[in-house]
Amino acid sequence: MNARASYDRIPRRLQAYPLDDQPHSNPAAHTHGESRCVGIAGLGLIGTSLARRLLAAGFTVCGYDIQTERRALLAELGGQPVDSPSALGERCSTIVIAVLSTDQVEAVMDTAHLRPGSLVICTSTCDPDRIDALARRLAPGGIRFVEMPLSGNSDQIALGNGVGLIGGAAEDVAAADEVIAALCARYFHLGAVGAGGRAKLAVNLIGGLNRAVLAEGLAFAESMGLELIPLLEVLKASAAYSRTMDNRGIKMVLSDFTPHAKVAQSRKDFALMHEAARRCGQQLPLAGVYLELIESCLAQGEGELDNSAIISELRRRRRSD
Image 1 (cartoon, rainbow, N blue to C red):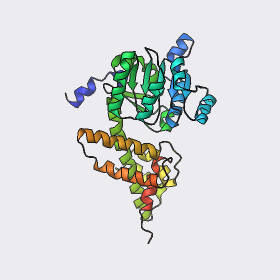
Image 2: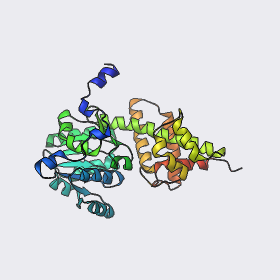
Image 3: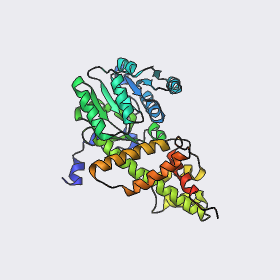
Image 4: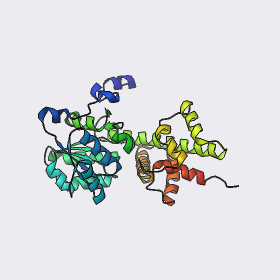
């Protein structure tokens, strides 16, 4: 099947929509006079952004995180913090997972004690093969599992501008539709569980390399004595333009590394890419260069900074004479 025919088979409901075409509130909540409860496991940058989306859409949100200050922030936003994953399973029939790693996703599922018929939406960037195996392990217990890793940083996701990359059975995706629509305005059903995660690794590979290219170009321009703020506007108007310039360019120019997506997360994602590439026999030479730069940032103690801090490592590679 060619690419055009494959695209034409995607249900229009799951192809990209303009942002203004998506509902801004939960229609079920308004129609039936009540808000459904959605649990969130993981209240870091992404999880908190997802909580904001769901609360704004009229859902009741229960949330768990190992860090008490994150649970306190959820309460400030209007959500209901709980003290364990099992409490989420007791109170909510739909659980959104927004933790860092595949290990953490598996740990949540092992301790949440979900009831048959519960629906899980996993937004974490994970090992696709392990997530597929997890979904298969949960299925006999009546647990429906949809993966939807999100493309976009925490600010973009909070605004509804993230892109959902969905893997799962069609009937499970349909059951998750209201929650998915509240979380992101654009989403694509790419196939069975695992397909969304594989697409996310490819997206993150391209995004990471775009950041590295922009950082190197800015560091190079700076070393030649160019003013970076006006140059950034030139780059945006030029054939070199990428969306990375919109959300990372000024952070690099100003060395504002307040995290929207962390260096340590990039390290984790690129390690997943290398493992997936090893399995399928694909070399990733440019990804290797990016990973080496990220490792150098980690060695400098920059793991908790925004991943635009990669420019700091490129600036360190400038001769001082």
